[in-house]
Length: 164
Image 1 (cartoon, rainbow, N blue to C red):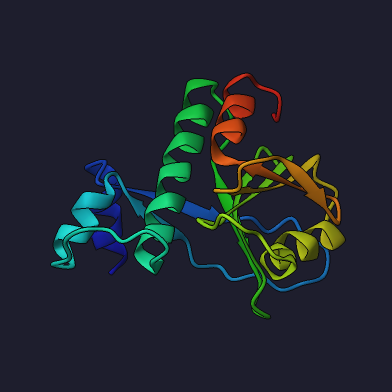
Image 2: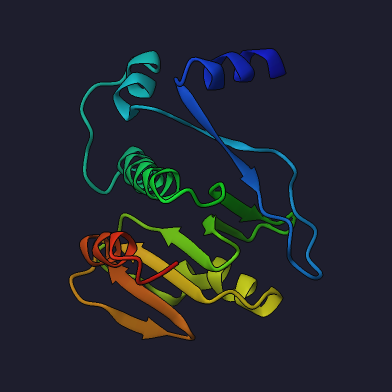
């Protein structure tokens, strides 16, 4: 199975996102995540058509879009790899950049406190510079030390190097 994933990486069909393990106490998974270079390819392989807003597939596509922006940013600026954090107890943060920025992605227009649980748990574990939830909300705001940003503002700040 590992050879199959290596072929996907070597042919640039998929990117691997490794687990970030620099936390203090919580045990993390060791399995990498993979993102196809194009969400349409993944959907075609699944024999799915269309993409309904507010569906789980829409959320996956939004997360994939943000991954590709983060990957492009880190490659362009010659930064380290994008990683993610997931514990055996169920906490997860979608992306970690440069051991400094934690990014959770939610394709929701109203973020609740429960959407912040992974970022808040990671904040208890480490001392990163920024904890950000990227969403479809219209205005930036802050809750429990987590900055909630509309996706367009997040990308603007990312590419202006205001985060890393």
